[in-house]
Length: 400
Ligand code: PMP
Image (cartoon, rainbow, N blue to C red):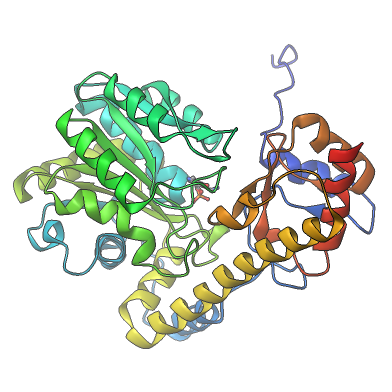
């Protein structure tokens, strides 16, 4: 009965890894997926995560019962505190409904489904460009997806004027997806002053912010600094949605641990919103997994472990920043034509190189370097050993 089914296309990001795995070259490098690698090119499990897991395993009173539909209560509280800040008025006034979800993606999807059912305006504006899964997640959630200008290829920076114009002409009440920090794929974030202008414009038009925070602590190395944009919006007392992921900042990719928080106008509304989130989640996957959320809660609630985590997180962020400098220096020393200063200016895990899809294909063919066709490279996948190879490849691609 399924014989007539057409072959589906590979995912544009995860498909890069599929192609990489088939390549037998010893010099191959995978810069496609945003997963952290050590200087030795190995995946990293944080020491603090190993410690938390050992504690959980040795605790014989722990059982494997189902979590509630909303997840681990302690994890939800700690997650809201992490992103909004311990002194956040919204938390103190019990105006936040938080549910544990399947990492960032699941949080976005649950938030999208909730909005499609209960919010009066079904249009969501996403930046152009954005993470490739955003349009699919929100369309399948039942929202209408539109885009707003974000990136200017000419300056390799923010198209701030275009952004303001597009948000100004959005219908009142529309939902706007904002990357909290370390915009993926461009690595270009608004300044604090620009965030303030965006906030004022959005609040004046009653546009509803939906923040996606997949990189808290990964951009600057500081958890608080990377949450600044979000906290500006919470501080004005208005409503918003927040999708959090612990994939990158705790290295818990495969554990699928994240949270959706909805900041509401009152504690009463937050309670009702939570009751509706449960009705979205129950028929979707019933309740979330226990292990990853237990790891996160163990770390966040213990000040010693929390400090250890922030140090390991900073070390990851610093290594990425140093890769930016090394790649920039390598291209400069080769005299590679073009201005490469965006490599050190951009923020977070990715560099949006400006290489076109032909150049990307050439680098894959000739140098066994894998990246998404939009020219995005994961700096976290680079090491001092692979930077010269990448610089040679870029140099050859732009001078061929
Ligand atoms: N949002 C953005 C902007 C991302 O880059 C990612 C991960 N690549 C996610 C959400 C979701 O990731 P996950 O579901 O693994 O937490």
